[in-house]
Image 1 (tube, helix red, strand yellow):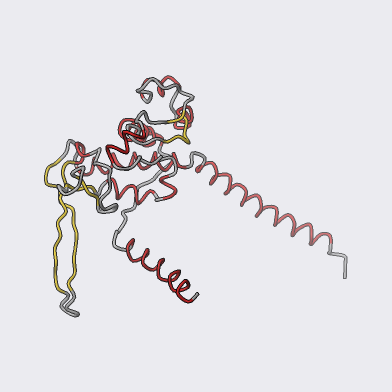
Image 2 (cartoon, helix red, strand yellow; image 1 turned 45 degrees about the vertical axis):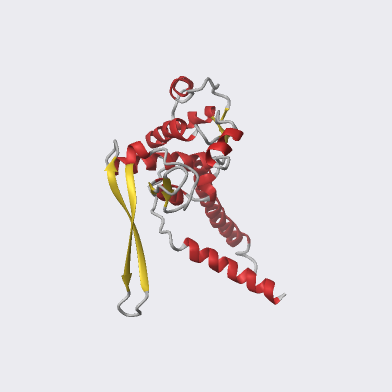
Length: 243
């Protein structure tokens, strides 16, 4: 029993220690920016749907982003899909496993499970690594099976590792930094915006009703606050003659 309790205490600590090594960058999410969401939807369809699916979302729901059915059909349906169909991939699972060693996961809820900051840092954290099968590695997800599908836009990054000695303790300290060796078609600031639009859409994708939910939550809180005031006034009026 003591061993089980010790294991339950140690495992979360190890998990925290491993995740603490990665510093996630804040994703500039704005679910009210429909232009960003529209750009993100197009990026998602062009690059992510080739291997991943988002089966919990239907193309028709993209009308919430200000797109007409004709715009969805002309710009986002590239493989003969219909507007009412889910956002599925045409990649066969058997082929996917042969290519990557694992079937690429559905991305419908990735932003809720991992968080927008994780995705944003992940998509900016690829670097060249000849030792891997794909030739790529990632600072957030080491030895990931996914290649860098946006490399033409970002360019080639290299991981620079430097070691130094702490003058106070004498401990060896390791620092890791990504350096752009070959520029891509986009400037770094443009690529960051490109990824931000994609992550913005993936955040919307994970919960399309999020903005409405928050809005109605605020409305309900104001209603309850007003109701409390009315209830207190009624109470005072009802009990004013009671001694």
